[in-house]
Length: 420
Ligand SMILES: Nc1ncnc2c1ncn2[C@@H]1O[C@H](COP(=O)(O)OP(=O)(O)OP(=O)(O)O)[C@@H](O)[C@H]1O
Ligand SMILES: [Mg+2]
Image 1 (tube, helix red, strand yellow):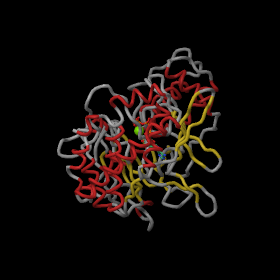
Image 2 (cartoon, helix red, strand yellow):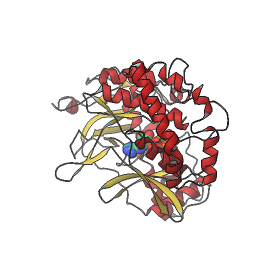
Image 3 (tube, helix red, strand yellow):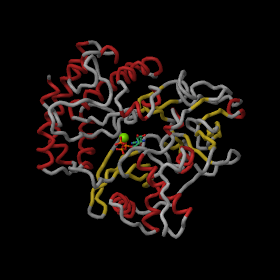
Image 4 (cartoon, helix red, strand yellow):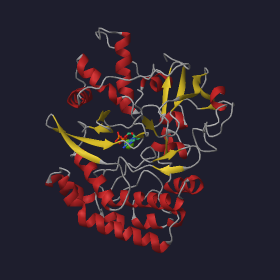
């Protein structure tokens, strides 16, 4: 590891200037977070997580964040894609000639990654190496076409020149596994998601089509559109964690992933330990409006079953947290995952039959989401009819070719197995 401590800054709700709220450090055995005294003394200080979770109480006691960082701090750190780019960036500073490429995997610590992500990271937290003044780590914005080419070359293991390298830097601040960059266009903050050389079909069209379909089925989702860049399709997703105050200054919204709300680590998320039912319980306890969010979560789960989105893991759900109540964020990263087998599991527990992606399983514990049996059945029925009636037309309008649509129709979208 290169750095062993980072100062955490929060943009308080509605405010354009951040305050330093605490420090994360490696103590030789594990990562530990402490709220700063000056933060604890502020009348407007908010705990960075819900009660009972790491950082959930405003106290001077240390929070142990294990070996990988956990909770709200983990949510502010980059994921697979951002880590790859940070490794490249740090390797370059260690060897500017690039002639003897450093292999940094395993050598960098979590704090290096936390510091390495830029100030445009998701949510309202940022991390710097100094507590006294906020010096955001911003990077010049490069043309999207450069970032696209750079991402493509990097995935193929090809060399990047300095310009292309710089263009990718806006991808370090964001989670997720797929190639992407963050950028701003006019007054909008956007995530640009690229296709991956590993895709078997047009996943940009699939995600855009699925997000439009979700909106049509009555879900609240992030706005998306497809943009042609250098002959390739790029998915633009409007960020919901950025806003502006009355004077036009940018403000941020603090977010917690379902992984954090459920107190899980990456390993537990990947091995399917997360549960929609437990997430609904958290909402019942802390949501500003459980009737609204419990129902919305149920409908997102049902929608994922209908379209075969089995990548609905606990980092693909999140809530805004303002220190007093949770509000489910708009839906994001909703996309069918092509499959050929008959049945499938979602990534989180659905009902009495565990993760089984069937509508009966979804209905089996609807009361946990605050719905009566009758309401839940009506909900499922209405959503099923909308998906049946509109999916092909919306996926086609999103740019998907007939062959890909046929492929998804075989076993992915409205798969016969979901009616078991
Ligand atoms: N519209 C948005 N506004 C704010 N934050 C977002 C938005 N879309 C995505 N994010 C954040 O960025 C992260 C990565 O985005 P996304 O999940 O779309 O990427 P991905 O690479 O497809 O992810 P995965 O690894 O699940 O395949 C999300 O986990 C979420 O924290
Ligand atoms: Mg994701």
